[in-house]
Image 1 (cartoon, rainbow, N blue to C red):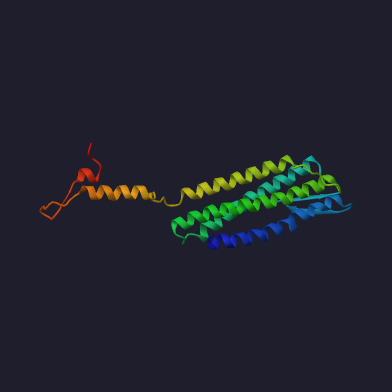
Image 2 (image 1 turned 45 degrees about the vertical axis):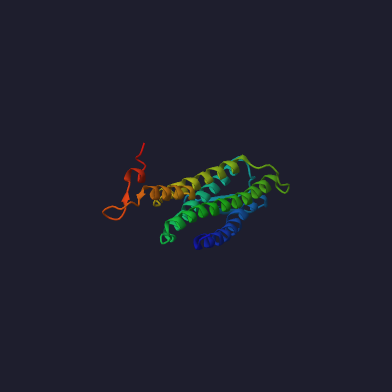
Length: 202
């Protein structure tokens, strides 16, 4: 892992806990008589409920907001990667890109797991449900697709690397070079058969 991923893992761990405390936990107040709560909707507004049940409409709004949050976090993370790894060598930067995608996918899985627990508790009203809501799977899938799209987009901007020759290919190249060198005396002491060197012989 590069220094960027090490820092990212720590930052995402802190963010996961912050999201659970500041965004998921307030939803539990829907099950408390006379309580209201307000949380961000991640599109410039707020979600506010009180005195009602966690029904189908509320569940859809809950997961739509989580999906927006996860996608925004993916864009933010890849933006940080782009600015903070510019000095890395090309091959190291490519590995860092893969590592960054892995970190954000793992973060998303943890957030969705916490959100599923909250969803089940809210629907159960003291007797938590055990099914995995379809909304969670759809939101998680679309967030992961966003990560893969961002990774691919950033990867296309990295310089392409020359292909690495295998040991067998290197041995064949040396054999061709030695075969092309004619050690019989010539004007320069030896001759090189260009047809053999470049494989032009039939």
